[in-house]
Amino acid sequence: METESRDSVSLKPAELDEFGQLLASVGLPLGDPHLDLHIEKFPLVVLVTDDELHGFLFGSLERVGGTPCILWGLGGVRRSKQASAVLKSMVGELYRRAAISFPDEDVLVGGRLAHPSAYAMMSQLVDVVPRPKYQPTGEERAWGRRLAKRFACDAAYDDRAFRTTATKQPAAIIHTGAVKTGGKAAQELVGDVDPVVGEAMIAFGWAMAEHLQNGLGHSA
Image (tube, rainbow, N blue to C red; front, side, top):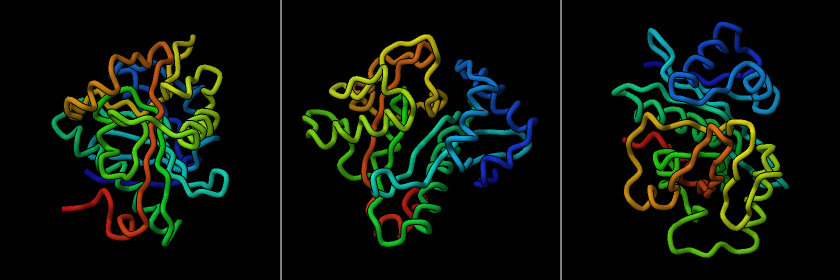
C-alpha cells in the first residue's frame, strides 16, 4: 500500500466519489457537500491506496491562538485486514508533516471521533483529554471549545463531556469502525456514540517536539 499526502484542492471528482463510497460502506452517509466543505476547511488530505482506496483523512497543520496544531478532519478506513495499518499510516503521515512544519515545537493534536480505535491512536500523545479518572482543567475545557468551533460543531458541544449531542446531520469524524482496537479503557471512555445522528467526542493531546522529530507514528 502507498501512503500519500497532498493539497486537498488537488482532489479530482472521481477521487471524491471514492471517498463518498468508502464512507457509505462503513455506514457514514456524508457525500459531496460535506466533502466539498472539507476541501475548503482542511488544506491537506492523506490517502492510502493500492489497487483501491483503503483510507483517507483530511487534515490541517495550523496555529490556533498561536499554538501549533494537527487537526484530524473527516476520514474513513475501509474494512479489511489492513485497516489498522491504514489508520496508523494516515495519522503517522500528518505527524511527519508536522515535524517539518513546526520544528522544535510541541504540537496539539485534536479530532472528532466515535470509536475506541480512533481514541487509541492518541496513546502516543501526552496529557490526552478526556482520559479515564481525570478531571479536566478550565484551560483544557477551553481547548475543547476552541476545537469544537474549528470543527463547526460548537452549537451542539458540551465542554464538560467533550461531546457533541445529536443533531440532524451526521458528524464529520475520522471513522475507524473497521479497526477493532482500543482496549477496555478506551471502550468505556468513548462509550456508545452514533455519528450518523451527529454524536461525537472531541479529544486532543500533545505531541512533544522530540517525539515528532524522532518519527512519532512511524516507530518500528
